[in-house]
Image 1 (cartoon, rainbow, N blue to C red):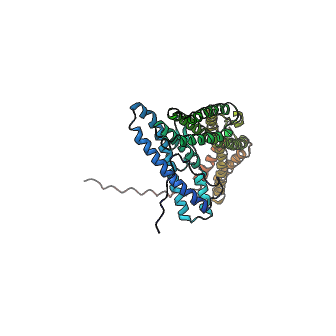
Image 2 (cartoon, helix red, strand yellow):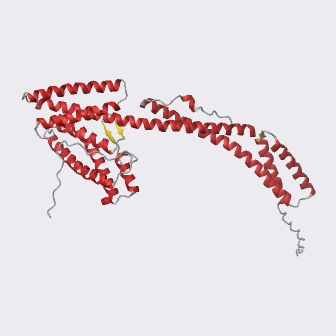
Image 3 (spheres, rainbow, N blue to C red):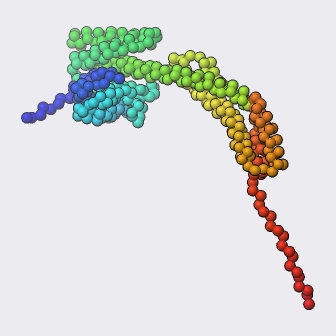
Length: 408
């Protein structure tokens, strides 16, 4: 039977809808459907970008410079999507999908792309961008349409009706993004931009119905719609990343606050145990205030948390070292005392050992423990017991002098 060749999606076709959501296992049937469609879409997008690349070479130097940066970004996104497709196909393994593989497919589809790639996804002036596979696909659609319009390679060749359909679809996708924008200035600004694009779209459609040539005005409209859609997707991804960063920062605040409370208890124990005791300021993480919302303020807040963490580390080490020194002196006194008790000493040595042990016990019984005096007494006690219990070497008896022969 002759195999039916698979048809590639037409230029301008949007990326396939991803099945499920993060944390929901993807079943084998829906994974196969999605992978087949994604494979064709990836091939078509690569062909579209290749066509743009060839068209750019025919433009002037200034136009090439203006387009090359966005083309590089689009190719970066295409590479990230293509790499993730390879991982998905490897995990799918021809349909051998168990519960573990179904979970992995969901994570690979809806998880962040930059967590498994060697390079960060980025857009001009936005820095690294943490996006999922569906978001990257939508961004790549938007970037490709923009590049095609700027290089005079609008999707659907020169068919005005198809270009209008594509622009309308992009406007509706953009409209769906608006409820995700926080209420306030950002949403009002995006709403106003979309309203202007709607009016331009209505005017363009009316011109086309009257038979006017719209080739000169549809291209800029395609670019502006794609830019707005891209900006909203980028902003949504950045808000999600910032929200995750705030959650992690709040968790760090809770952890540092718990550590600080434990170190204050350690400080009190050290002050009660030894004298002189170290005195270090233990910072109060709550004094930094609530976790801020803005990205720049959040970064500065995290720097302050890092300094608080280092200060807590130093305080912990210092107070723990003070208590450890006390335990070391007490342990040394006990060990040397046991050695002295098991040794046979002369009456004079036994009296000296008893006196040193009495003085050491008096020092150890003091609250707080005078650590310097106790350390000196313990060292003296150890040195005396070592000397008293060391075997005495025998001294050799002097030999008699040899008689000298008289000289002749």
